[in-house]
Image (cartoon, rainbow, N blue to C red; front, top):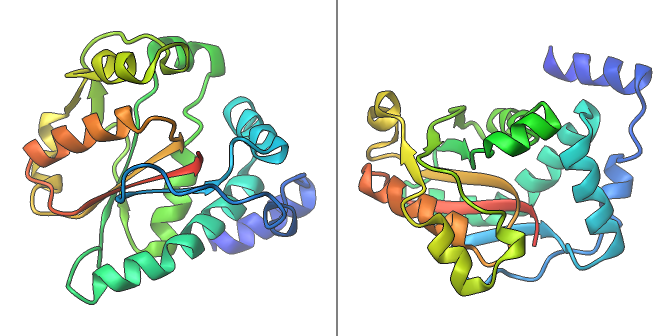
Length: 205
């Protein structure tokens, strides 16, 4: 039923980011941590344009196509882990937006993508599983060292979701990975909550 809806939506509201278009965007280099994975290169013009569009404009067809590409890029990684009993039915969480970003955009840009990804890889998406505990500066304005300090103890797992995360494998989804500081800090609080295996995934790097 969801696929039928997407096909109808695609016909009524054509997206500039078709499956074919996405395949022409240069792929990202491997992030500096071996548990992090990114799809497209932010240093390419097409990659930057995609990310800007993703942050500023809702597009269900684009996000559905992105979810397919992300799932496909993770297929080999997840398959290898599943041989050992990991990531059979993982949890997907998203990096929380700051209050300022929510006010500026009016929506959480990764939420729809996370739902599509969960459906494709047989995962459960928990929206707002992670909260911010305090205001943080924009990471893009800081040095690598400052970024780690900026997000230290800035996140927590909502109490009601701890039982869903304990002993589970978790995929953290975000739009971009730069230094990896935000992903590492969220990984730390997930581990504290009892999560088992964790990987971080982004659209761009």
